[in-house]
Image (cartoon, rainbow, N blue to C red):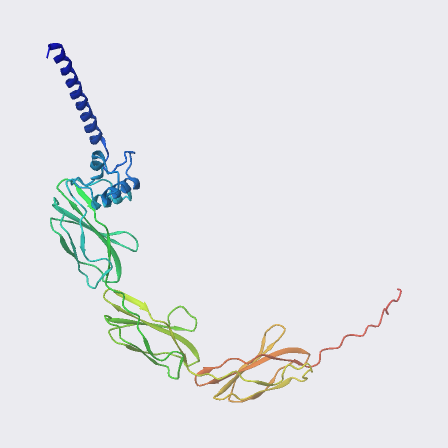
Length: 404
């Protein structure tokens, strides 16, 4: 081979080697500048990148290129698998703001399991170890408001017992992340648990609902609630919202209350159970009526007649009411509402009242009866006219149509 030929072959080899070198430089530059998670090279990490990685894991064609595989391996563990998919989803959804390095995967939570109910002031947490981790961080939040209840920095341990929970039925979320001496890895998924249970509602026993009592004292009873150490009784009178009685008792299921007036008033009562963590819910109301009062009397005379009743005294009568020991009569001027009579008469069913002007005034009257338990309802009103009204004057002068 002559020198000229050798020089031509050498030039071709040199050119080929130079091309390969430039290609390698470009490839390395592309890989180094490629964003982790940006599998489709559009400058963002989004759901389209996740879809490409999922298709690769499931074996769909075409396969990812080496550059795409480097971008898809967001935890830099040399493998593209579901862990990378989970991390990409956490990044897209804002749960993490960067991808972990040094193989600090999100820990796998062990206990409490999802939806666990834990009865006690101490809750034990456990999770799987993460390769390369030298520390862990536990975060606990309240589900009701999303506020962080507790953040705990832990050493290289995969369990911890946390105390001072109220054991009051509150629901919490918890999660863990692993860390090294220089950084934190991604947060795990969250799990929920409930600490304690709200005490059940007591079942009311006596007096039965819609009972009538005859004494000034009432003994209230209810069934025991498991876990309760105290109870609260509330009694309301009629439609009032301010309690007539509000009493807290110890771990007993009865309470005697006094001061009921036996006047036919209706009361509402209910009970709730409590312990050192707080109060449970109120029971439904039971009602009771204290005392038995007479019905409204039936009026006999005078009964809404148009015929005037002349004279300065008027006789009133009504029918007797069973159980009544007293009656009250009320007479009022119908024009201005002023009372002529408002008097307790004793156990009678008639009364003569005096002092009428006998000048044609209209009056209304009614009666109510009382027993030993109190006054009953008023009767309806009856009306009457006392005396003749003056006649209309007779006109004399000028006469009708008279010219003056």
